[in-house]
Image (cartoon, rainbow, N blue to C red; front, side, top):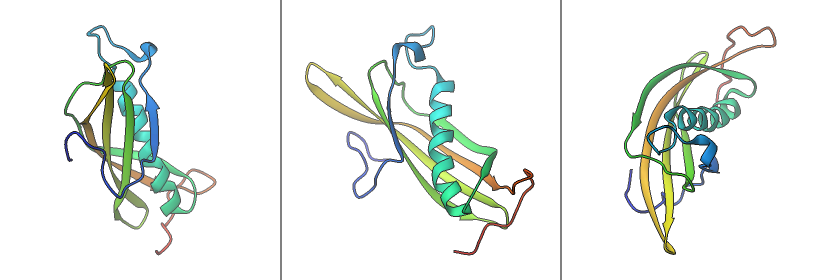
Length: 131
């Protein structure tokens, strides 16, 4: 994850500002809020690759590298890294852009790997279509 810049040649899956309602008692953004954004971001390329509905099966890793503050704009980048018979693994990188006195700084704040499972209309696992 590069520091002080958003990734080049990549488009974020989602961008969301951190709001005062997302703050924890320590004065930074609640980790659960970031986890929720990561799951949403990861589910988008997983559903596209699955060609339909998916569910979150597992979180293989989740690392909070730096805090996020009220007013930061988070950008989530998600990429499918592995496809199994019914599962899709997605890596999500999160960057925060913080503005202070007109100067924007960017930091890599979170990285996670999630596993999704393609499901049918009855909620049962189904095969992921061939690429």
